[in-house]
Length: 431
Ligand code: DLL
Image (cartoon, rainbow, N blue to C red):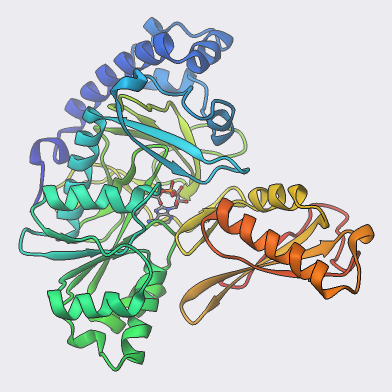
């Protein structure tokens, strides 16, 4: 089924006309309402009225996560704070998160985009959908929640954690579809088996997975374990959250909701726009966001765009699975983690030095994070109590900044390898 035939199956020319009028309106609005855009357009010599074609988009400067950080928390908002009805956040590169806001109109756009996305994945009003994303500042749970309700499904807001109870809910409520990160889907399956429950005996038929990269081999592992069809969906908080793109039944890339999100692929080094079919960094402009619009936002996600009409009938451009990024952001149990966030914590704790190594691994199907930290020479002592205090403090602060727990291992001064060039801070054993 197609949720919104008019928007999803538009003729290219009609879509481009709509995109242009929305873009023109957006550029004028952000110029008037957001000092950051006014300054950056002025610096680039751009008069909003001079945007007369979609190609003119390429003249506009990019927006980066660093720009959002410098305008923390609300200076990028284009709507009055009184009209903002929801605030979410995702990881920033340091201790402060990236903050995004929604007006009632934004929530409506979000709900519709997700309803579209879940419908194309195969959800219907007969489904009972267990949402195992954390309900909180993360956009995953609330975004999926309202879109699924709009699509008519029965939502089970199970949130994260308490995995045995999740299995019990699936059995008792007759869950037919699962929404979570692909790695959590594997972990859930493993726990079910440990409990003596065969996932194949549960009525789950469909999985909607996203928020982290996953490979085709992981897809088949999940499908075999659960006996379900596993679909991929993509989004990011800075654009709206989930609902930017998702697979249809053909699973030949994720359809991007282009009436809301104008997409480009660029060469991450030169910034030049690349043609369809070329691999590069995804850049998005939000065409309909009210409170938190972004212009040419650099996602750092690497993908490829396919413009050909899909066998499902939708005409929107599809994006290939995202398997890599241009920066060092890690996604651990669905949570974005920047090494620089960890560094910020280390610098703030007396006794810890900024010499560290991050080890990401997978235990069973769950990601684990370990941080090796050199104790500074003046603080290094044989006193177990003092070291245990530093360790506990680091663990507590990392947990509070990253929202996931990290195991901290203190090591003696000057024992971690020093590099002459770029420090090799991260060892990701999951790859
Ligand atoms: O992860 C939004 C989301 C929630 C999408 C639930 C899908 C399902 P952020 O926390 O801001 O938002 O993280 C965004 O996660 O730039 C990608 O690097 C990565 N990402 C999201 N979906 C996928 C995916 C949500 N399907 C960042 N495949 C993005 C690969 C993904 N990476």
